[in-house]
Length: 122
Image (cartoon, rainbow, N blue to C red; front, side, top):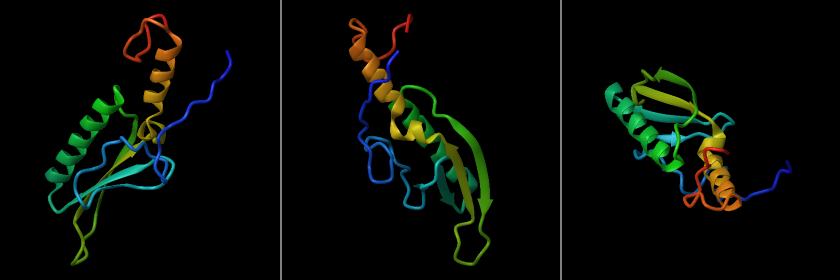
């Protein structure tokens, strides 16, 4: 089987343009290979709720569960710091949309799949 190249619509940091971004100004997808996605808040339940909502949004966009390799909880007790930070360590290929591109390519190569998803025989 030969590997056929395909293109991804990525921003300068290697993330898919269509990837849902964390909704709050304190939250961010960081720039390292395993991509920690941070959710910061003075209230832990708020940070956890936003991280869960973001995971659902990305799963809906990706069409499959996001590979999360770890969850890290940290805190900052400095006077001006936001106390809690929840970090989800996510697979960078998922955040770049690779599964979407692979399904789209496979859908083009296999007539009759219709929606770009792999066939059961695939």
